[in-house]
Image (cartoon, rainbow, N blue to C red; front, top):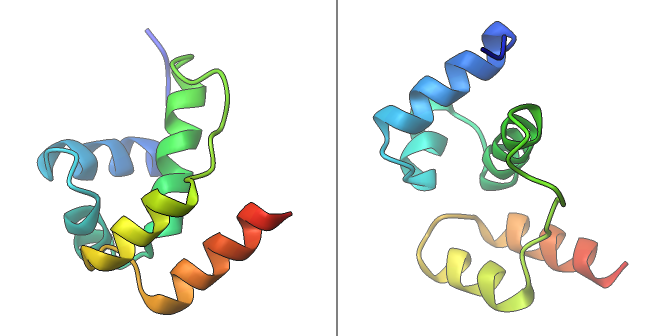
Length: 84
């Protein structure tokens, strides 16, 4: 059994209650799309389920923006991160 910090357990419970809907997780926790993704990546790594942290590609970012999952500012920041 893996022991998780309380913050990770809270995130996991919110994620499960939201049935993996990132937009709903954002709303329930009052955090941004990139923060949700970072918390999910951290949790997956802690559970040994994620070997490599993958940045969203351009199309994924634009789709998230189009679906209202992220703001224009968040999309710009993610696109800038992908260029480096």
